[in-house]
Image (tube, rainbow, N blue to C red; front, side, top):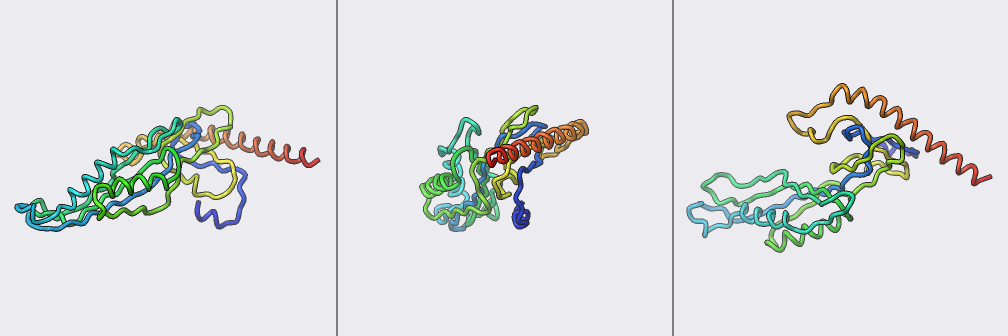
Length: 224
């Protein structure tokens, strides 16, 4: 999508393919990535008072962050915090000198800046020395069009390429399969869903083209 932004094209409507269970997704949560790093003082675990365990520092911050009050909305529910990766220490008998965690935050309301503020304040309330980084792009909840008849509408919690394509175009999110089996051993698409998707995409495309033509007629009528 970012490459498509450089083509200099103006899109009337774009259909984005994702596993929506053959339903039109009316929106999805936003995303904010976060890395928290702790630096302590290493030493022999038999003498913990002589060192400072970075893993202990990190875990305290993570627990407090999971308990922090995050934005929520009627449409998207709660903002959720996933601790995806934790790394630190060198051995069970050594006080961990360094530790870090990577988090994925799914934003249900508001802008990323508000969630960044909550994260920073929460982490720094544990220890000012903890480092916080927010790598990668971030965005708030994304509302998507569902104005084509004949499709059930849902909202989803995962991120998509929808916000990456610039422009004032109509945006539709549709596809076969379920996100509930993504990133797991049972990830799959059924042949039946693929066959149904052919019909679904055809109906969606025809419906979108009809709305584009209707909009153009309205513009022409206003100009006359």
